[in-house]
Image (cartoon, rainbow, N blue to C red; front, side):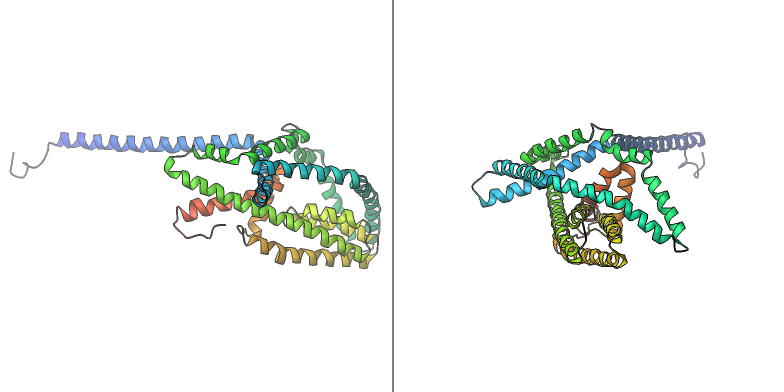
Length: 367
């Protein structure tokens, strides 16, 4: 062997080592690929499972919201009285049940009669609107569009999809009972359920879990408060405004506006429709006044009432919130549509805490 060949290994041995290294790299690549495929398959399977039980999960989330509502009032009473939190919770439930029973007994027949009279009034309003619009060139096309939209909304398949949120589970009454019972259990002893969830993660990360629950509870409580204050304010302002205008069915229309205002952005638009239809029976000028009244009330609610309260909670861009409502409504029906805003609050808080702050390291002003 020459001087230059002393430091070289035999060609066959070098080839064997190269092949061994190639096999090792190939095995490592195959192993990583299989791990990625397994993780993706597990995520897809988990998403499919969640999709199958999505209606039940939405009912559980509704129970959590109701439990927060009850617990917040109970804690407030307990802090200002000698009662314990659980005793205060029993008092809150008793007051709410008694109030609903008394309101139903005293005003239930009048409210039902008001809705019945309104339902009788609306068909005549539609006939009058159709008669007036036929005088315009664009009237027939507009009426045809309304008719097609009405047929789409009254399509049995659409109605079945909307009603499916309850019929696929245990029925409307059964779902309501589930929400009530779960909310009472959660409100009575929330700490035990939070502790159970915290034990699912490593001990060094449990502080983050408790912080997340605290932040979420705070944000959802303020979201509930903002919606309740907004509903009451819209109901009172609408009732007073319709009385000043001399509109019939003022109480019923204000009740509809208050309840629908619980749904941000879209609810107030829907509430305007019956008011405008009733205004058509009173003349063209009344329709204009109703539009102005509802627009002014929504401006006050959007730029004065809600922003003042939302300083204490997370702020969500209207476009994101509207997109969440549309996606949840299309995917899960009415229940998904109603719960989209608080779910958006939950997602935004978790993203800001667990990703923007903990992963990206940016400082966040958390609620």
